[in-house]
Amino acid sequence: MEKQKSNEWEKYIKRFKDFPPDHAFDAFKNEYYYEAVGVLHGFIESQLRNLLLAFSSINQKSELSNIWDINERLDFRNLSNVLFVIHLISKKEYDTLNSLNSLRNEIIHKYFYDPYENMYFGVSHKKFLSIFKPSYNLSYDLIEKIDKMYEDENNKK
Image 1 (cartoon, one colour):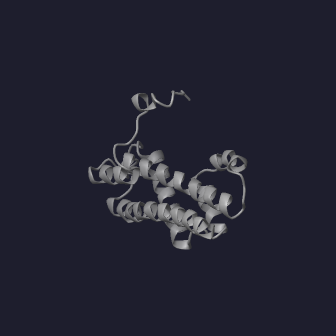
Image 2 (cartoon, rainbow, N blue to C red):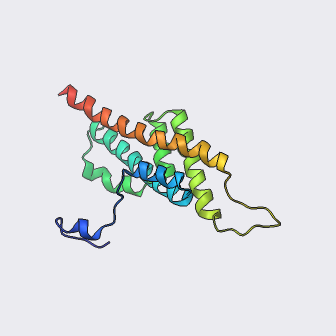
Image 3 (cartoon, one colour):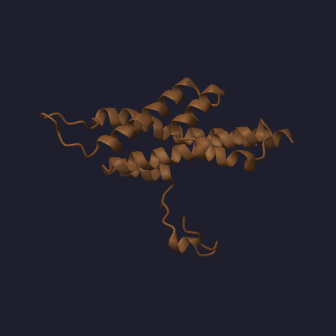
């Protein structure tokens, strides 16, 4: 990974102009489905990591340095499993996350398949829409959940 001085990174590092979930939603509206799912999936994965970090630092009184590296090694599926087991996400949120992860895998791994015997292995618009919109909403719910955890902790002090 290339490192940049803190005052130079904006010149060299590509970032989204919009907040990532909104960028993903715009990509979806403009029929850039591959980008829409990739961006939303990546953003939600980072929020799942942040949720686990918040829980660990607040409730377990763990130093972030002790858990940071381990947290970074967890993939999307493992993060959602852990968060569900420790009751930080509901069954509905867990199901939405699993659907998004399956959609992402289906698009990433089957997007370039050629039709086989006139059968295309893509994703229908109806299925895509039924997964993408709840996932988009969940991205904001996760942000609120993390903020609330820190807010509740600060109010205890």
